[in-house]
Amino acid sequence: MNLLHFKVLLLRSYQHAINELIKKKKIFLPPHMAFGYEANAVAINNVFDNGDKLILTHRNIAYNLIFDPNLKKYINELNMKSNGINKGLSGPMNIVNPNKGIVYTSSILGNNFSIALGFSVNNKVLKKKNITYVVTGDGAIEEGSFVETIILAKKFKSRLVFIVENNDFAMASKTKERRDDIDLELLSKAYGCGYFLLNSRNVIDYSKKLLIIKKKIKKKPSPFIVEIKTTMFNRHAGVTPGFSGDLLDIDLKKGLVIKNNESDPAYLSSCILGEAIIKKIVIKIKKYLN
Image 1: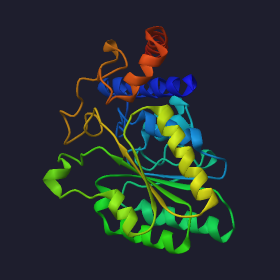
Image 2: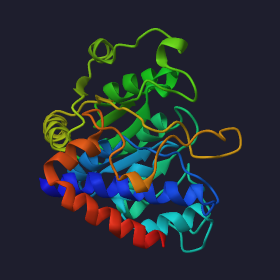
Image 3: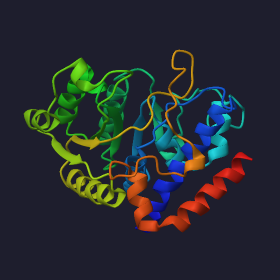
C-alpha cells in the first residue's frame, strides 16, 4: 500500500520537473498540468488489467506518466523528438500509448465519450469482460454526448466507467458561473447506471472503491459513473500565449507539497511516508534537471 503513496509523490515530482523546464523554456509544447490529480491516476492504474482500455482528455499528463513512468520519453514527445512516446508527432493533448492501454486521447471537449463507447461495445460483442475507462471533467459533462453515451452504454450493457474529475473549473470560470449544479448521482439513477463519489484524496481509499466497482460490473455488466472531487493547484498549461500569468506558486525549491491540507493527495501520501522519502525524491528530480 505504501507503494501507491510513493507513486503519488513520484508523479507529483515528475510534474514539478516538467514545470521547472517550462519556466526555463526547455519545453516546446507545454502540457496541461495536473497538480492535485495524482491519486486519481495512480488508483486507476492500480486496478487496471491487461486488456482494459483507457480513454483520455487534453489533461492527460498524470495518466501518461503513471502508466508509462518514463519521464525522458514524455519530455521528448513534448519537444517533438523522434524518440518521444509517439515519435514527437502527437503534441501534449493527443498522446496515446496502446501498449500500456491508453488507446485514445482527445483535445476536443466530449469527443472521447463516443470513442470509449465503441471500445466498450466491442468488448461486449467479443464477449470480453475487460473494462473501458473514459476520463472527463465537469465541463465536458455539459455536452450532450455525455448523456447519449450513458444511454447507449446502458442499452448495450457495456462495461464503461466514466471517471469524472470534478475540479469546479473550466478555462477561467467556476461551475456556478457557467451553469446550475448537475447531480451526477441523480443522473445515474435516472439512466440506471451505477455511481460512486470519491472525495478523500487518499489513493488507498480510491483503489479500494475502484476495485469494488470493478467486481460489480464484472459480475453484472453496466455503465458506471465515478465522480472524483479534485482540487487543481494550477490553472491551465503553464506559461503559453494567452496564459502568460498561468503558473502559480509552484516551485521545486519549496518541496513537493503545494497545499498543506487534505485537499492535496500528495500531502496525505507525505504524511504516510514521511519527510525522508520526500527529500530523496526531490534530490533525484533536481539531479535530473541539472
